[in-house]
Image 1: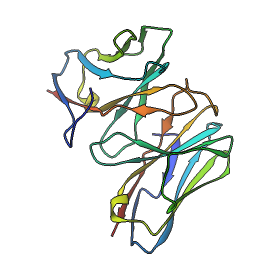
Image 2: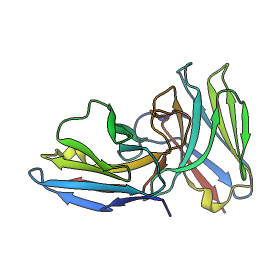
Image 3: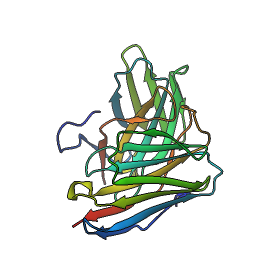
Image 4: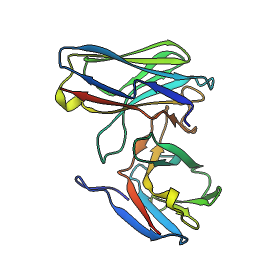
Length: 115
Length: 111
């Protein structure tokens, strides 16, 4: 069982819908991440939050909007997505912000399908 | 190893044998390396990590070797079991919470 919890596990939405993905961790970690993973590919970094502040945005389209309400929660708001955005969206956390030498711990992801 | 196109490199190994999964990296400034295991329908699971001031680190049934001269990382799994069947990713970091993942290798354990 993972200590990073993601909801929902599966999501099907139309291109005009607005939905949100949620991620929660209670390990006291201060860095949180969103990744996108297509089939048979490695995870691709989207966003990094360090001490609840956005520290990295990997040139992600504005139809993806991250939010970090507190140190335990991370949301990804979705609006006007395209079919090519269908993928597994993974959340991860690590102990300290700004550190490169700590493992990231992943949730099991939200499988997103855009109709 | 690195994947090309739509097909993951696959390592088939007999149950009980040792497995070696290889990974090449290109950034000479990378100083932290990590291996993940990803089973179908799940997120990547941390296996073992190593810092660049080391060349070997051992865990339970796993060993990571780092050769900075040739920018090569390997994961050795001793006495491979059916539960080891998964996709394995190496990842590297050169700073600031950012990990760069390799293409992945699928390990299939034959009974």
